[in-house]
Image (cartoon, rainbow, N blue to C red; front, side, top):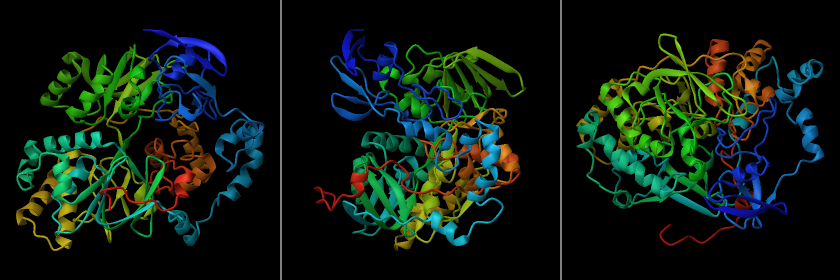
Length: 578
């Protein structure tokens, strides 16, 4: 590769063109990764978060650029950002909120402040109902650049969201808005995946009852629908109004008459000792990395907890070719054959096992897997890719105070729905937000769309509803292997280094709800805002307490939003958006 010159804070340096800016700086002895709050562990390129904190630089005068997401080019002028101040050092020991990490460095300090911290966090007494309601429902006060009134809003343009749109049968003149955080290219891929899923043997009778549509453009036109791609919902209030942001800079206020929530799940890593090593990532995080960073020179091991679609796994195979593949479920002969074909590996390199441990210094060096019979296999690897371990994204439901139930498959809180997928007066939920398996997700989307169509006076085939109920009831769950073991030193919150032992100790000290534990420990208050640790914390709390955990309070914004976007005045509609 070509060696090019660049500068960092005025110093001339050289590195290979095409690697990331962070890698180029590291090759010159400068490390941009940050240390975690309590364990002081380095976080590097394969950090579990999409955005590595403390890795922002200025390039050619443009500030706030993530050094792990930009490829090096010759002649770049790079400058550091975020120099440490005196307050940053003081805050490490006396941070606002009395976070648990501040009292683990010194046993004396922890004991001295213990009773005071209990008082601040309402230890031993129930929350005031009015305070709890106010904490759940937040008033948003801003001037959006656009208001969109629509008859039906679909949040999430994944396979289930598009299946709901395909199944809608609304009277002429009714409008639909579909909101998705991904680009239109991703939505096109989801549409093709939906057609392939509907062609499966189990869903063929359902497919024959739905309209024959072959492209996303045709689907949007036939449903009088507008797709807002690159748009993320960051707030919900008033029982069904939504605030969304386009590209983090333009705010849209959505006011639908009816809403379908199908915004899906997040992938999370399994918990085992030292699970915060930089070499352990989810498949979605790996796909989000720039090409120059994707598993170059790595020895990847892939762990599938659930049977993902072959189309998605083909994208993963383009990024990382695993030396071994492990499944946390019992794969049949057909699916095993598809895995061998996609990844180009031998039959003996696919095995049923779950992660049992990871070891290394600064970076991952070995991965251990536990078979169903309890035996352990350890292999050299510097990249463990975890795929299919899903956590329902219930933040929007929490903002709307939707009723929840505990999923029998994931043991996580999910929206509670009736037979028509309705979870509130004008809100429906479907897809992997409610059901963890693809067939159930698609069928639930069709049921939600049928319920909305019937409420608008449309006619649907009488056998369609009966068929959907039957498919929901008889969808077979995948038999999974037991969860990987963990010890008290296992990190469940990679942002703030909260461990399984911390959860047990806090519960024993009287912090008997997730919310009380969060106020004391800082759980869900790191850069990920709970996106990567909620399932781990929920499982740990349930195991320690022997009861289901409460749903943690969620406050908007759910995603970062520039303050300038919230202060925008009205902007004229773009062509075709009225």
